[in-house]
Image (cartoon, rainbow, N blue to C red; front, side, top):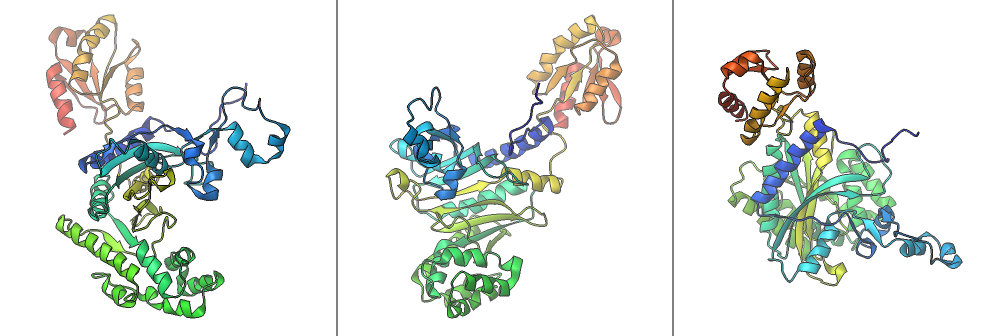
Length: 456
């Protein structure tokens, strides 16, 4: 018999990890709901016609395709087999696992737009699959946590995303973070201004490395990418933009000739002003002219969140897109969204030791089992603990106490109720604190009160 193994790029999460992951998901979910986002779930697989062509050539290759059930190759001709993998795939596979949550969301909006209250605010927490090369920190199955607003151009959405991030991260214990913001229009304006119209893509890829490789190397890379020397010299202000307190004054004078860039700056100024009105003191937001993620689809604000003083890079990202639903024949539905990287947040919290000690998912109290009489008594009080909202269990077998206490120890159960003949007669049960070893005799009701107080 062969040994069981995990598929590459996937992971099991044991009870201890799941308790921590559940804490992250519950915290994020509560904040999403507090901000008026509604829950949505879409199927694990979609028709390939929905998925293909939405993520570029590379994305199409990274889609997990599902073989048609039954005799998938029965109707294939020799010519089909000879035609190569691409045409063949469409004949033997009609469905694929979802690659992200955005495209299924766009499909849902198009299919249900007649019944949705617009603007539509939704959140989605589900796994996605990518046939990527597995490596450290990159998996073939992972969770995404997305919140999006579609059907409005209002910059309130951008300001609310800033507020939402300032709500979620401190609730997880991550207090030292930076929300970096840029605007696609500013990047377009810079490319136009230096005479490199439409080249903001390669321009940003190079500028993005400024803090890693320094100015000289960035200039070298721009020359290699076909930028003219005089275009590069016009970029000079980008290397010296400071403006900590007022990040936009220098930028406005530098890009005064570009209408599109000024529009981008004005949008960001409005977001900054709204965040102030919303009462966010000491907002951890920073304008970053080199931020260039997701250029292929973002059309306005671009967000990236970094946890400071840890090895992991970005833990969240997002932005505004003007045409989410255009690929499904319904153009012009604008939206803005944010995605939180749960796996990266988990790693940050592990590195900084931020998970709370007691996880609500584990057992709080175990009832011992000495003999038949004690077992029957234990069974009669067990439902009382559960009705009071206390996670509880009874040891199923009458074995030596040491074995029962070892079990409680291994499961990190903090309290054990010991029931012997004395306890049954007096109605006073012995409550043992597994951490301190301390024991006290209490009525069932008093134990419930004490355990509930522990959770406060």
